Image (cartoon, rainbow, N blue to C red; front, side):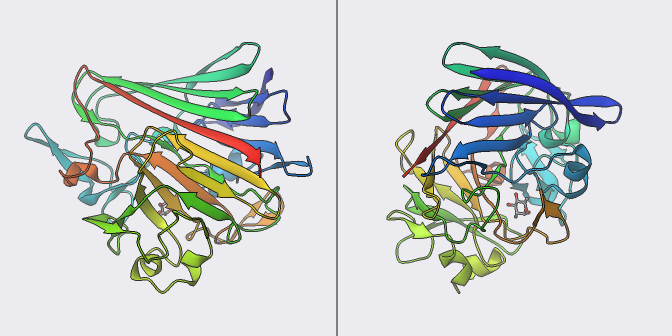
Length: 348
Ligand code: G6D
């Protein structure tokens, strides 16, 4: 394992530092102390050609100007909170309304837009970056002083693990995810419509036109949302199913996972042979197929465009605070929030 750090840029006078970890099987991962942003993941294809498989930039300025959460940790609460308000223990809190009167992805300066303190560590078969962030009481409207720890670990089996840990001195909400956009073709040479996805999920959440869960849990049976036997991503783009149309022709939906740490999510690019297996302890994964990606910027020389990358955001259910039948995302005072997701890269 090799791990090194270098200056990436500067934001508001503070240095943005990049940490690169390289394992002994040709996989490299680079991440930043700003937003925990994963800027690059290099993995081999079936012929051994090592290429980048995530959407990212090489300058801070591009992240600030163009990035729709490329590679970033998202929180305190990922997804949307209806009306930007919620009630805990009889008290109503108002969080930032940063999208159409709702709260999205932790607000204007959520976890994706703050500096995290970093510590690196390595042993013979793995290397880690531990990130720490103290989210003060009232940040973006959330109650409680929340101490967050996030650990990225890359090992010699091409497994990249993300662990989250949080404690708060007041009851609050926590539901954190990583918003990396994957594209297994290598250096964005194709979009993800030809990728196949297999998911052990027989239910997904219905969305309204604001992309908020309605509370209805739908069966995937006989719909373009049935990934149990594997399906091309483009099926959701060609689909006339109301939910694919609501998502601007594609997917932007939470899928309830039937299994955990049992190859529950498998993304494959048949042409390169690259495969990504995602396994998690989280109840759901939001599949977002980049339907709202703009085309007014370049990504390392490639024109940005719809479907150039897709996100597999493992997390609690969005807007759970307003749906008592969803698993809770309330972190009680003195309790502990923990989550773990493993991304294994291989070739088919
Ligand atoms: C859009 O609806 C999508 C979200 O799911 C995504 O996270 C965001 O773009 C980047 O708002």
